[in-house]
Image (tube, rainbow, N blue to C red):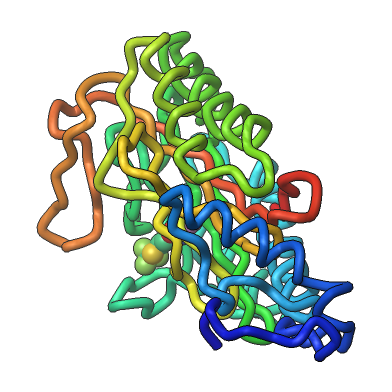
Length: 290
Ligand code: MF3
Ligand code: CO
Ligand code: CO
């Protein structure tokens, strides 16, 4: 159904709630209509999750979060990224879930492991983690067809002050962009917040990757820009679920994709960090699901 179809105020709402339209999404549609007149793209109704969708997404996000929590005790100097991948694979399967990356567009492993200058989409391998490395692990679980996507940074043993600062600032970028965002804001706000914090620290924001809507698909609309965009971007309306996943480089924002067609590294070999949450836009606030 598109957003233009008129519904009688007493008819059942288009969202499937069984409530009357006037007691459900009538005001929502009026608000979006006026924002649309101001030039903002508004979400298609297919991006507004049902109660059942939300419950399903929450469940897979919970498992993703649990796995990322448990990795704190597993990741240490001496372990290989293949061993971490194997542990996540077994744990995911044990919970009757599926690791989304495995065979996704040909990706060969269950998680992405991105070390030091690797920006994202690093492939687990037999490289041993050593003291001073910084590692990103990106986990996405699927339960009953619903996706839960999140990533965190793991310092390997004692790391340098500058690596630790990059990790902390990148986390601040993610957390502040969530705090500053309200329902019915344009998603421009996310990139505005992130680029201001990164600029303050003389870091750069990676542009070639972004966050994404998610739910029954790994990646759906909208594309979430992590940097400032002049054009008006989509309104974040209650019912939407998307990820925010800033990648921040110590040096230049430019990236190179390696021969494996996945691993993205910084062009200048500087360090890169990333944190990711899946969030839900509820009536009054932005809820972190992971
Ligand atoms: N989890 C990543 C994201 O945040 C996507 C990884 S795709 C893969 O969107 F194939 F590399 F796993
Ligand atoms: Co993601
Ligand atoms: Co991810």
